[in-house]
Length: 90
Image (cartoon, rainbow, N blue to C red):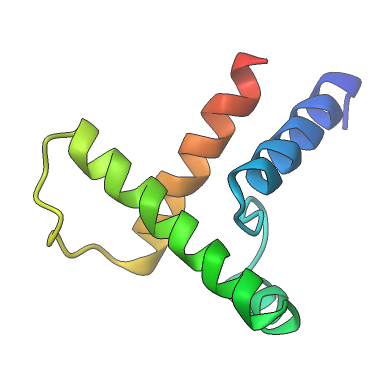
């Protein structure tokens, strides 16, 4: 990895933690679930709520109905993209 890529990944992790969610870029669903299970129940609940909040914000920005059903990996991509966008703006 180049220095620029390492910096972007560090910024991504920083923004994910700043948002209060478990970083999801480059990680499997099992790894994310494991991280949530290892967290204090209150912290895990907050992280899941923050994830849903980012998802709902994206839906509103796209003028879509909040009951829209997408596959979990599609939601992950949306939330990941929102965090990645913030990291790249730095």
